[in-house]
Every structure is written in structure tokens, then in C-alpha cells.
Length: 277
Image 1 (cartoon, one colour):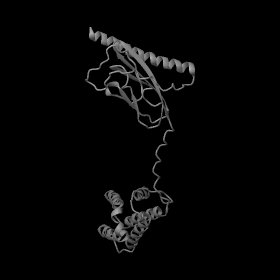
Image 2: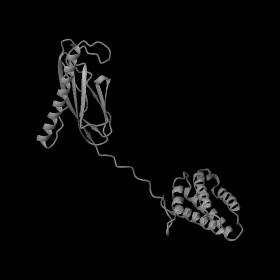
Image 3: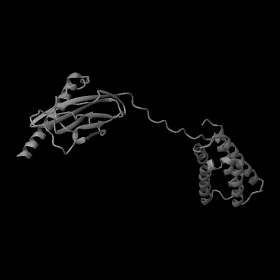
Image 4: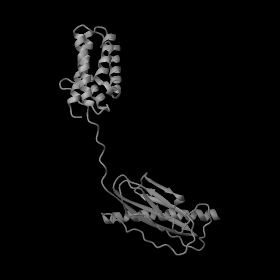
């Protein structure tokens, strides 16, 4: 008998919540412009011995259900809102928010709810409570104000040397952009000089074998970067992987191929150093 009575009561709560929603939409249809209802200022019933702690006995015998909402009427975008009905007279609570949102959570067995919105708008919260065969429903509207933050600015495209753009030229700019060094531009100029020096030795026939070219390049880069060598290791590792891939594909075997690639690296470095960063 008690369970049947409880089911009837909760069905009544749900019906009242639905009626409150329908009433809200009827008001919107007639009104063309939704106006925020005033903040609920229902007074607390005097001397109610109501505990908010779950699991304890509530002395609610003879009381009539009453929803008492404590919540702001207006908040800024992104601010966390707490809707508190812990001072209400009731031991069963049901919530609904219009429009629906995932950023809404009921806690403390229905006695509180938290909400946040990243967009402006108006949100109506409907809460019903029940006790001793009586049910009460209240509505509260929170207006979220402010403008939606602009999307993050995309990272600028890495500089590419003028003339026909090559895959390596684009990669040079990308790798340089990620270098964390206070003297990044000067470092790039020095590193470009090191590659140009090795290319000149290749053209003169001083360096002919890939192993000798790589060894000489490593020493030249170390001398050019000095104390900033550690900051440029990510760049050098990316370049090394690119050179190894070209060699495996047969595109970096001869002296002329090495000279052309080294000059292209130097060109990309110099262009990066003189571009707006």
C-alpha cells in the first residue's frame, strides 16, 4: 500500500513538472519575446525541523510541500551556478532544465544542482518536491550573459622561401618555428652558413663521400650553434630523418644531390631568419 502511494505521489510530481514546462512554452508562444521571471523569493516556513543529511529521519509530519529556490537570476558565461533547494519542505525532488543541456548535474539527493553554460541564453529550471501526499513545483530562470569567446587563433604558416616551394623548404620553416631559443634568428643564420660552407666543399671536390659529408656537417653545426646547440637538437633530428629517407629512396647519393640539398637547407634557414616570426 505504501509503495503504491509513493508511486502515485512521484507520478504526480512528474505530471506537475510536465505541466510547468507546457505552461512555459505556452507563455513563449503567446509572448514572442521571452522575459525572465523574477527571482523566486518564497519565504522560508518558520521553525521547520528539516535535515539535509541523507539517511536521517526527517520530522515532516503534517507539513505541506514547498519548494524554496536559492539561485542567481543572471550569470556570466562559463560561471558555475549552484541552485539550492535544501531549505525546501519535502523529501523527494525532481528536476528538469529547459532547454536541455549536458552541463547540468543534480546532487545531494536532489537538494542541489550545478550548472554552467559556454553560450549566452536563458535556461529555465523546474523543480518539484513532495511530502505527506502534497506536491509543490517552482520555476526559476537563469540568464547567461556575455559573448561567446572567439576561437583560438591558428598558428601562423611557417615562412617559405620565394620561388617554387619545395617540400623541404616548408619543413625547414616548420622545424625552425618550434625552436625555443632567444637567439633563434641569429642561430638560423649561423646554421645556414655552416650548410653553405659544406656545400662549397662538396662542389670543390674536397668532400665526396656521404660519411665524410655528414661528419663535416656535424662539426660545422656544432661550431655554428655553440651554446644553443641543445635548443636546436629537435631541428637537427627532424632534418636527419628527412635526409635518411631521401638516401633510402635513392635521392641523396651523389655529390651533386648532397650539394643541392645542403644549399636548399641553407636557403630555408636564411629566409626564416629574415621573415616575420
